[in-house]
Image: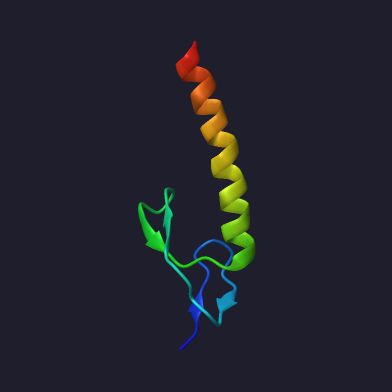
Length: 55
């Protein structure tokens, strides 16, 4: 049985590490594209958080 990406619903042949997904609250399988997008989002959100803390 193939796993499906929890974000976009595409089937994943190789399920790598389960990524912690904040909107689900638990670790979930993601496809490569979603994992890359999530990585970009987390970097930008971390920058924003740091700016808020500095103020």
